[in-house]
Length: 400
View 1 (cartoon, rainbow, N blue to C red):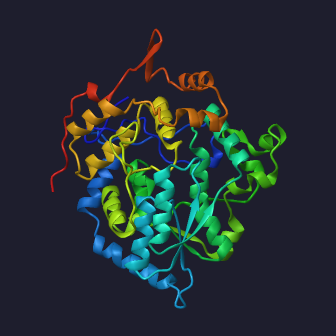
View 2 (tube, rainbow, N blue to C red; view 1 turned 90 degrees about the horizontal axis):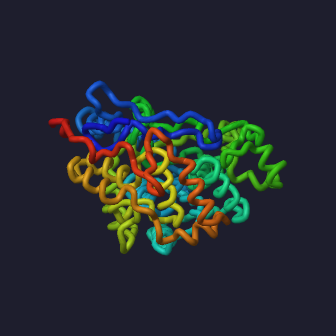
């Protein structure tokens, strides 16, 4: 296990994957490091800063919008999101700067936070039509429990739904153009993935067959045979039908390909233009108040990431802000040391009730997910074998 010499991410960080194919034994591709010990995300941050002609990229966006813009005022693009900082920024910029007519679509969180639902209403109130899709609660709770027990990944049902809802809405309403915010490749996938403006269709489309679906680590046929779900129960989780997408002409673009993406600047913009509000308290596991605050299960997603990969929420937040120059690496290391291992107590009982598991079962699953190359046990306590604060930073930000 090694840590980036520029930020605080380790080589254990997983890359984005096709969520509806994951089993308990699926290998996970991780972030690449170069010979100087710098991660791919930091190298791409340099490319964003010094090599990309953002004026030319924006010109490409203007042309893309011109091609798809409705002349009659009907919807001409789909913007999936929750009303958080990123989707608020994306939709508002497209509508008020580039003259588009977006239809916003939302895959509901597992358990809304008060601030999350209020931000959804603020988003709508800022001038947007919205369709809120809430999946069958009984099925969603079951899949969340299975994802936690089998994959230590309780957020998987939300990730699947949020990634699929845009393309599926495109096919349903005959609106070909879909915009998501930034490409997740910015944070650790292959650098070359950032130079494609569109999302790889393998993330959101299939032939529409349940036999190839895996949810919560359980194949689709087993969910029907062993857990007594029906094909209709699983429809919301199926990726978009490839044939319908081709008929519609669906294309899924990243706004972050065309505009230089900075999460904190998205927050400032959304707060000013849509009324987006940060939380009134620090998020457990980190030091921020404005990122991923819609869902009460969200903190447990990051806590399980900390258990599986030795990287918690503070690591992700600090790495991102080091790359954008908001904080230094030394500050980031201190924040990670202080907050990364923090347990999310606030909604713990509510999340246990939601997944219908006991605290003992929760602890059992958590400890089963600790890889021995990351963790050692001293009596009843667990300790990381490697942490970023155990190392000394040796490489600073690249010069202009």
